[in-house]
Image (cartoon, rainbow, N blue to C red):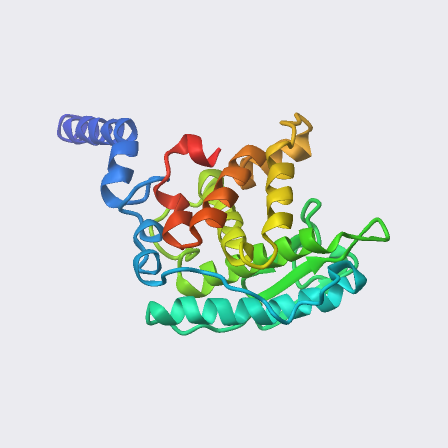
Amino acid sequence: MLRRTLPVALAFAVVLAGLVHFRDDLRELVGTAPGSGRSAPAVHRLYEMSGPVGGRCADLPGDLDADGEAALRALAGCLDRMWEAALGRAGLDYEPPSEMRLVGTPEEAACGIDDFDWSGIYCSGERVVNVLVERGGEERETFPMMFTLAHEYAHHVQQITGIADQSGPQVFDEAWSRRLELQADCLAAATLRDVHPYLLNDLRRSAAAQSDAVEEQAAAYRDSHGSGASSARWMLRGQKEGTMASCNTWKAPAEEVS
């Protein structure tokens, strides 16, 4: 019995060792490696068919800080129109978020109550966009909140188009999360580039100047969302080119999504 099973066990061990040794090559071959040009998020038809993203937003008040919440609600309507047009060119139907919730504390959000400090969060199950409008009891500046809203809207688009689909073979790890988040930064910049370009420039430069803090919470955020420098680079791409194709983080080499 031992003589018959030993060769089978040895063969199984050799195959298993080969799979472990060549797992990165196999993941690239089947399109599940981060940065693989074969992966489903990397070859989505939106990149070729959606054309420019964004446009002007005539509904915004002249003084953004006079009523930040009114500015955010006006921008939400503009974002709905921008994404409806972009997805329509690709033959896809756009569905607005089920709710855009402006919250004073994380406990008022539809999800993410126990997550670490955030300025905005998208609840994919409920399809609710949440934006934190206060920080420590103080109202936040309006344009950073507008960018947060545009970023969470980008997550909504990733969800409804299947880019963020977690039912396929794609590996969902921190590298995947960074690509998702940096793409949302890029798409947010694309939607806002004609809305307030000078304020977007200031926000991008602020992101680039962020220090690489070593605190545990800052490191965890960087691991899942990317560094400030990477965020600024992808924001610049979205701002300059304004297309889905320019925001294809899924094909980018690892050093560009760090």
